[in-house]
Length: 310
Image (tube, rainbow, N blue to C red; front, side, top):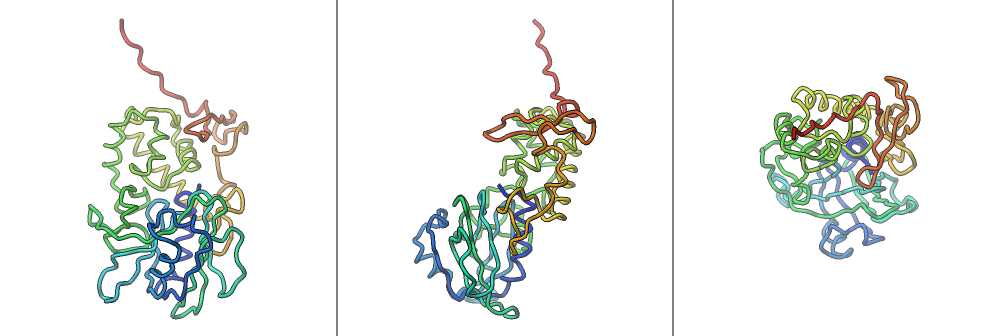
């Protein structure tokens, strides 16, 4: 599933193409792409056609494009929201371009400087979605996410925590949350209501850098360890962003269909049996939450549980 770097690469590429653009028409080819939308494909098409778009914003793995209200000086109160699911793509194409493989929805837009552009939502496994959603205020009055200065977020995204690269992310609140959790630290990192944008790949990478076993109970980590882990999460995410994200196949691409190359920089994820870059021991893979964890059993030791006194 795309994680923060892959989704942010898409948002950053989408933003200049949509800001200030008008939707000329919408074509829904597969209503399975509208699972989060309460109406029909025809209603979705009608609701979007003619709307003026603002720039693309993101929180966690969600992207949204605020829709300018009739009075353009008013703040947007509704947005087009995209979740890429496991294989969703948002692609920019020339007007009239041939349909993409697995194309589900196409928006034809008119940009004031770039002219006509086709925005294509393609999704091989159909777990991604598009919808229209009202914007609600952020509880902390800070901007809703990357790419927006508005203190609002789509209602369906309101439960998603801020990501660790967000300027409004609160380190102390994160430490306090961990202190109350008996769950394994990797499970907490994957909990999008506690910290967003981190998935299986970057959780494994950050824990490897921090020398923390993925099954370590979150509440047992010291303040110093949590601060160090947050630092490692940020470093891993920033490096992945710089390299365009991680692509193991043709699914995770930017708006131009180009794949990222951070997969070549991974130290733990997907390296089962290969030597650890730090100690030379073999990387281990174990089952975890219907997925897999990759770690070095020598560098990332699971703390011993204190024995009870009889």
